[in-house]
Length: 217
Length: 217
Image (tube, rainbow over the protein chains, first blue to last red):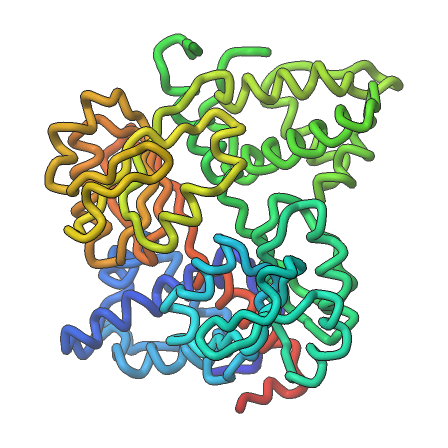
């Protein structure tokens, strides 16, 4: 695996995650090798996409024999930084926060929620899976002590920027933002945005434009 | 507003949703007009992106005066198909389903969950906000009667394809998939995928590649 490539498109990185999942299923089925075409088909991509996405990171597979399933799985695991155990803060202990906290894929892939913050006095002090929910005003002092590098932001839109600022000031370098608003961060900090309403609206657009005559009611 | 354009890139459509949110905030602040630059800044885009994204749908704004805030808000609302009330089925009444059901932005934007399905006998028959949770094996008969056009899929990965097939067979034309797996649908059906673990892994990649020497532990 060659040294990290910083200019890999975000869409390619997201496909690596999908290839990784497909490889895990293949490995569970005991399949030893896979062609780029078969891997593509299982991950919802095309063969050329698979080859191009992987080419950012070196040379993989053997011409005519495809990729070794366990080998490529391990390489993608490393490329995606999943050999590192990421210590994550969950900011916002509402319904979205609760669903994320329970999401089994996070822990399985090395993302461990080690701190939870909320501004609701009724929630502060409660425990989720052994973690005590802290007041957000204690974030600046307690977050750095926990050696946390990532934050999941599950707060209402008006609070998102302030919470992001506090997390970044406390040393967080990556934010997964679920608030339906863009947040600004300094250079060197990464933000990914999961906006469920935006996804639903883009579905609405797709369906709306294929309705006969664009009828609305 | 010109007739629907089908070849608008998905990324442009997602930005329209962000412009819409920015315009709503501007309208709430009583701001009558906005430049493409200011709108871009509030939505995390660039001025040329705003102008290009809007140009897919006709001519907006006045040179030198910018866009009328309430006018453009109403036009985007229509372009995104939000004047239509979408009847939505929630398939999967677990923690992710519960968080989505409670998500206030959905209803506010015309997406109304009118049916809920789950395969857990302990959940079937319970009510969420007046809606009785039904067994998934009743989906083929009950979903068409409810005139449902969209489904939110919040089931475990192994069940996702079967549930998507059943929803499509029952008349659903748009699926928002939260299961961490690609699903296949026939032409004419739209799928958007929200994969929270993929987003977290793409953050992991970004942070991993900027760590000194790519150190892992």
